[in-house]
Length: 237
Image: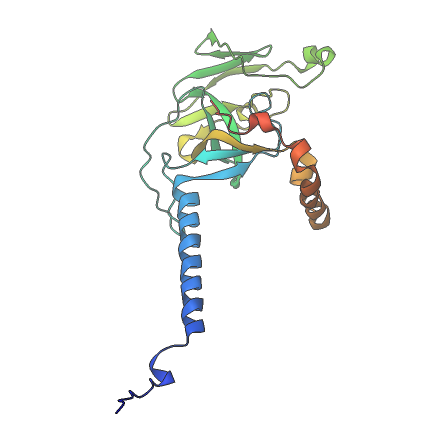
């Protein structure tokens, strides 16, 4: 004699395919949430499309920004996490451009609040003392330098603000032209170069969808010869 149990009704358990779909969607949500939290509170990879920091950071460098110590903003609120460190003179920082906070600039801090800054024939003076700046470069031809030498009268950096300059002094939109930056505008500091691809600024900044798509597609062909392999993993100071 055989005892045969009745088969379970189909309505008592969701279909196997539906369970798999739920698991996939849940995993995708968790991964997306982890990426969003990492990008917001810890760090992110950012492209440098201009040459204002040339000499230290090149056009096409993809840099890792450390954001965790600079009071990252909680999404969809005006709240910020505690700022764990203050910016020091000589550091490179990423910050919201004071005149248009939607733009992110990358510059070097040459003076902090309470100090004075002056430029005389391309020489930087902080508190009246000439500064040694081995990192700066000049992109203009030597015969143009005399007429383009940078001069600026003494500027008193307000408390809680930073005076920033680009390492490429001949091609940088910086505090010489629009003043100091509130320290609270700083969102992070570059740690290292994740990847560097040799292409001009116009290619990275092109807003034409067709030309932009064609440029990124060309990377499939030119990836190896145009990648600056020696810069990959390079630490930034």
